[in-house]
Image (cartoon, rainbow, N blue to C red; front, side):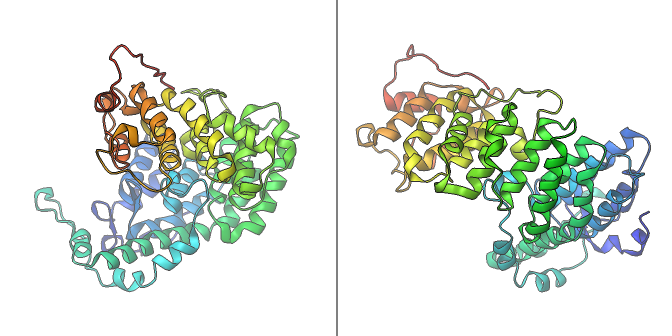
Length: 420
């Protein structure tokens, strides 16, 4: 396995920290019988070829070897390899949900990027870290903003297409003996709409097979969501499944395809999950009760799906979000606010300093929910700067105490926060 790995001049390829000559060793370490060695290598690869969601020149070159591992039954942890390939293909999925991967948009954005990449200098190499210079970044900074966008779009697209070449291998893993492998294979297939016809058929066969075996709810749910992201609505029968996670998946998958034409049962299921009515997924789900989409934030994904249901459900969607908002914090709060704020400000942000009396009823309700709740402002025990920036960007105060003063809320007015 990994024939040809040393034929690549990795030292001339760049990753997040300069020359990629450490990547071959990290790839080989993924085949180690020692789990600690594999874990360290996986962490190094995430840091180097997928740093903070970014892909680099070396990223696309690593992909064929990862795909080769998937095709070999001796690979110790194919589920982990699938997870890395998913990250390399699309970055963080929150950026492409609930619509799916916009590949046509990426292809347009990447035009001209190949030539720009070819013009860059080789990356930094050396042993003296004090002399380290990020040659790639210096080159990128010398480009116009438009050319920078083309360059990075091409790098991301080249990595995406490298993963796309392995779609047949990934489909074959839908029949793997390990449910985690089946789940992550189904998840990865969701991001390749240009391969949708054959992938939807393969996913349909997988879910039909799964109904006759001891498939986990997470596995079935992942198949249904992936099917929806590829443009095929899950069958309505799944909305009456006894497993809540499967009903959730059927609803968000159907919302993705049917949109404003979604049936009442689909709408009701999405609204229930987007509010606090269905409860939050536990911090540590039971085995088999987890999906990889949006890091397992079921309510957050349902909140995103509300945008697909059309304006006729806007009032109910906004009510659901206000019910959910006091129960969440961190990234989950950011997701909920990312849907609620545009509903409250359909004409765009208010001018900073807008008098309270000039707010619309929806805007006032959202401001009051934020003023009366601590949790949405927090990441752990600290103020979450991303939430402050998002709320402030709509012309509202960017901190809870400022919001309370703005609304003239009494200090003993109660705190409706409930951490989810």
